[in-house]
Length: 88
Image 1 (spheres, one colour):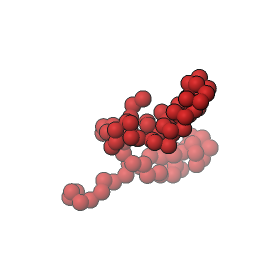
Image 2 (cartoon, rainbow, N blue to C red):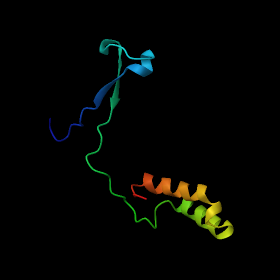
Image 3 (cartoon, helix red, strand yellow):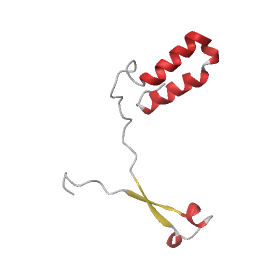
Image 4 (spheres, rainbow, N blue to C red):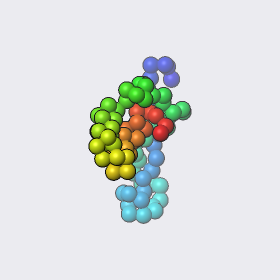
């Protein structure tokens, strides 16, 4: 394979979804799955600059109502940061 070719996707049988239970391999459908990354991707931004929308909403809620009343906004911001590659 030359360096310009894309890697071949890994194929995995999906029997239980297609056939409502275990089935012989010949009866399974094939689903293309991307190979798992070798290492965790590094964040492309600084944590202070990531997720400005959820950060603003979280901060406004905490200032107005207190931290204990804003767990949903805090968790939403954490999820956004995780999606950006941060481990929080």
